[in-house]
Image 1 (cartoon, rainbow, N blue to C red):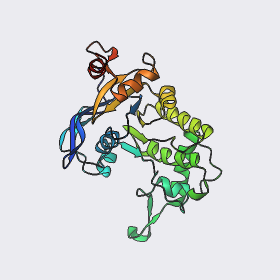
Image 2 (image 1 turned 180 degrees about the horizontal axis):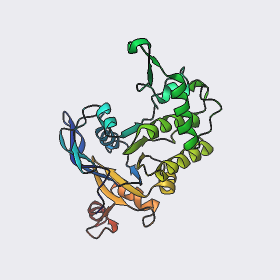
Image 3 (image 1 turned 90 degrees about the vertical axis):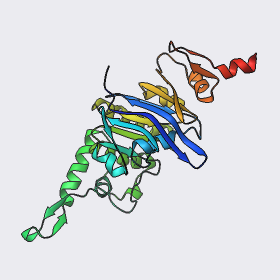
Image 4 (image 1 turned 45 degrees about the vertical axis):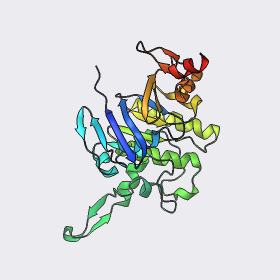
Length: 267
């Protein structure tokens, strides 16, 4: 079997009497786009925070390339090549594109006697432009303040930053939310180009047409845990919705069938 790039087993996270993650499992395979879907409150955000180091689970295990890891902060996850693009994008509007792409990871050059290290603005701009060109992200000028960009362009900058530093996986939280049809299509094309580079992507989304358009597999999350992993090629959109709501389930043969709860209600 292929060793997952990023995996988890039995993750648990409780907040008092509320269980946000309830024995959740997760597997991201090399070079794939894995969509994570689920209703509001299903625990998707908590799962992704655990995988990106923003949340420390109470129990369970996370592995990168089969090696057990312990993420205490997002910086720990970044050290293992896991990059996350959150819904708020974490961009600094007044700064230019290159400054945003290297935010917190600025390139510096040696000053006199090596005592003062100045920002190497030229190198950062050149590297930022290279990544944008490689991903075919159209920006008028690398020196533009981010606040002058459209929503889709801002998303592109955030994704390019993740792709520039991510070596194992890129996690994207609702990347097409609040975008128009044309800009959403450009973001999906960008995700496809990242996959073509061999970098696997985790896509958290409520947009089923987008999920079925881009995902290789669909991870269905419900009540704090993974309830199914299905292929968009063999599973319909209505079936995935049924798995999300609990009306359907996956049996021991991997077939999507009516859930025990639904059968009990109809009896």
